Image (cartoon, rainbow, N blue to C red; front, side):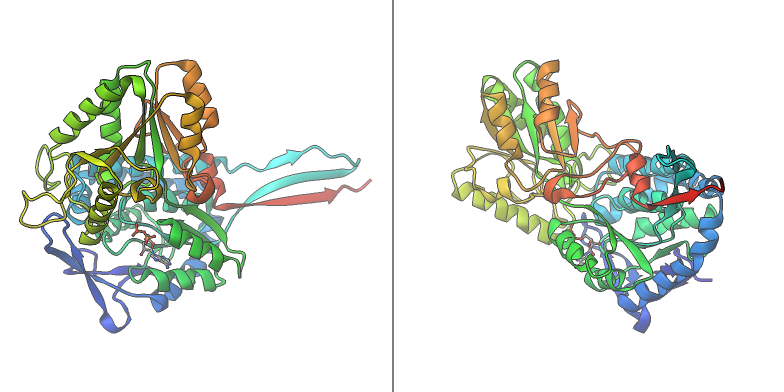
Length: 484
Ligand code: ADP
């Protein structure tokens, strides 16, 4: 049997490592060096169809297992990921660019996600509902939704598939996963953990290839009952339209444009440290990254000075090197988009306090200097479009109600951040902000047991937590009449 460690990295369909029809392949590029890391099999609709059929065939046996038996596979997957964290982290850094320490944290978070859903699958409880008519009885049962098609992006290439595979398998569903074409290699290593942990053929299938074609097959193939997508709002909307024909179940985790609001009661230098940590993690290429910084006028000067100092001190470089804190951006296109956002901000009056350009310290790689801007015009693109870039735009405010209004003035509603030690302010902000995830003095709020997802155009449904399991379950209501 060919394995994922052969020179050509393959897809995995129906228990077999397979090439694409016609032998098509695509290169995976190291964003720090621009070198080719590997060639991967690159398919489309036919492979997606075969994978859905395999998942459909595998589902009856998988859903008949007890949640306790399915949990064994998920728990063992978590253990194997922890054992192999160094190897998978290196692969992740090579293909995605983030520093190895961040890559390790991502893999451990994903392993925790597998372990958590192994347990939560045991709690897919139905209900006994009190009857109102004598002699009747009412109960609900939980039923797996069916074959799942999952599409994930490149920014968290292990964690985001884990948020779909773990709850789907725990619920008794089978799955076809399509990772981003920039980052398929660490997904292959995650799949190897699942297979060694005992996932039977057809239960997890990996299809690498053209997003639109594979998405079309997920939408149009009636054997695929649910689509779970993490990615851009534009593609999410397209999939939502396409899902209507078959009333396909949908989970969407889309873009964000998170406010980070700094109140004057707490030390602005501490606030700046938290802000810089949240902003430049993974180069700001994070759906929950803070991207509009509202700083109270009383602490604006101190916060700004500290934010500039901390941003300048970040060590930019190849993520495999020790001590590097910020790696390259994912690709040239992403870096060009960042240049465009900064040009637009400059034209509309913004001041660049630090960074603002491609780094000239590297002959190769998509490096961009961590950037801080102020004096922004409210209609500059960086404040209205999801930036996905290492750029911190600073704004100011003086009144709580005004800042809530400004923070909510966006079609997004994924995350929001508040820096304060004042309990009343924290509570009012938590109530007033239109965001699915709110970090109070916490720039990295995601945890397997806590719901993750957005309001407004940031998505539909929640991942992680009990809601993340419910997303793969249908509720069946059963009513019966007893004999007199
Ligand atoms: P990003 O800009 O972060 O790459 P995308 O939404 O374009 O965000 O991509 C996220 C994932 O969606 C990737 O796996 C990509 O291949 C896939 N994708 C892109 N376009 C489509 C589409 N039209 N239908 C289905 N999947 C798509």
